[in-house]
Length: 182
Image 1 (cartoon, rainbow, N blue to C red):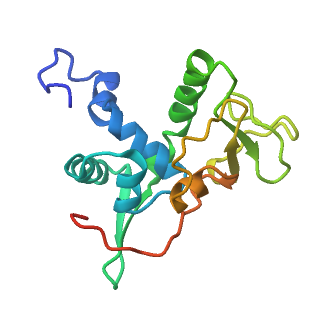
Image 2 (cartoon, rainbow, N blue to C red):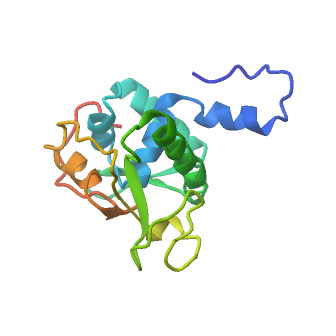
């Protein structure tokens, strides 16, 4: 649910950012988009989000320029992070780190590595091997010591998300039409 647009200081950048991102499903959609989820049905299955909510959130994120909607000639629809969406990575990474610190007693749920030299990344995204701050497309994400399989690893999208892979690399599965897809 968005904040009312009648807040006192309409020039507050945090309030405006929260109008776009301050809803639980939104950040989870963005997280999954970083993991390579692109199709409506895959988002729906992965998140367990009501289809009407997913439709609304995707439409809003496209309208805000966080995601781009791509339709091909065969009628397939995919959603992809834009540069504006990719710029959210430090925020997503920081929230994941915070969640790991306070809610994952066995350690990080996911660890990030520099795909080129396999060096672990620190909290600022700096590779411990080469010392560079690594751009999102060169980050490999993999299960960490706190990762706990949920039992949903039987579907191909979950399996792909739970194996080492580069961020933003699309998860491509055979297309199965989904009722209610937008």
